[in-house]
Length: 332
Image (tube, rainbow, N blue to C red; front, top):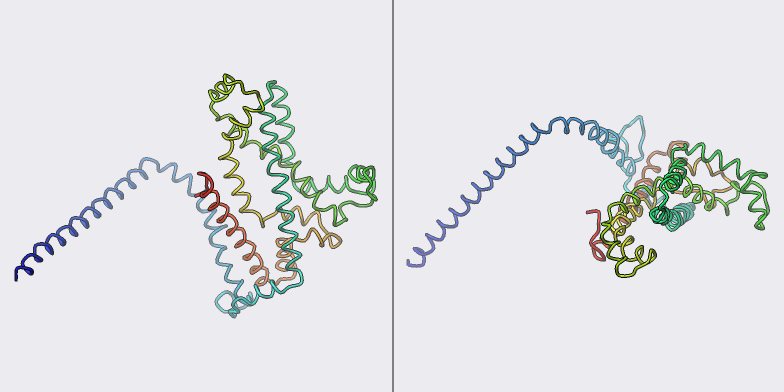
C-alpha cells in the first residue's frame, strides 16, 4: 500500500510534465507559424522573385527525375511508364558486361583527372600572379584578355581548333617542329586529350579565376602588414598569408569539382571526336547520347546515365567527409 501511494504522485507528476511539454511545443509551433506568416508578409516581393527559380528547378530538374524509372524497365512509348515491363537491373548488368564499359570508364576518368590536375590549379596561379601586379591598367588588361575566351561559343572554339589542327594548321606545324609526324592532329587518338584539356584551360582560365581574385580581396591587409614587420618577403607572404586565406575557397571549389568527376563538357567532345578517336575520346556521356538519341534505346541509356550520376554523388560525398575530418571546411 505505501508503495502504491508513493507511486501515484509520481505518475501524476509525470503526466503533468508531459502535458506541460505538449503545451510548450504547441506554443512554439504557434510562434513559429506566426513568425513565418510575418516574414512572408514583410518580404513577399523577395519570395515572388524566387518563384520563377523554384519553378525552373521543379519543372526541369525534379520532375524529369521520374524518368529514372526507365532504367529498370524495357520502356516503350506505346506502353508508357505504367505499362512498360519491369526488368530490374538488366540494363545495368548489360552495361557492366559490355565490351565498351572499361574503355568508357577509363576515358571518362582520365579526361576528368587530367583536367582536374591541370585546369584546376591554373586559375589559382593566375589569381595569385594578378594579386602581385601593382600596375592596375596592366592588371585589368590581362584580366579582360583572359576572360574573353569564356564568352566564345564552344562551337566556335572547336572550329578554331579544327583550323589549327589541319595538316597545315598552326598547332600541327608546331608539333612537326617538336618531332611529330604531321597530319590532322584532331583525328589522332593520342592527341585528343591534350587538345581537349588545353582548349578548356584557355577558354576557362580567366573566368574561373574571378572567384579566387574576389577571395584574395577579402584577406585582411593587416596580416600582410604584420608579415612585413616580421621581415617576410612577397614569397613568404604568399605562403603564410595569401594561401591560408584562400584555402577555404579552394577546398569548397575542389569538392564541387570532384562532384563533376564523371561529368565532362560532352557537347565539346561530340564536336571534337570521331570514330578514329573513339579509343581515347569516347566517354560515358557521348555513349549515352549515341545509344539513347541516335539508337533509341532509352532504357539502356537511362541506366548508363544513372550509373554516371551515382558515381558523381558518391565521390562528392566521400570528398566532403574527408574535408570534414581533415579540416573545418565542407559543403554541408
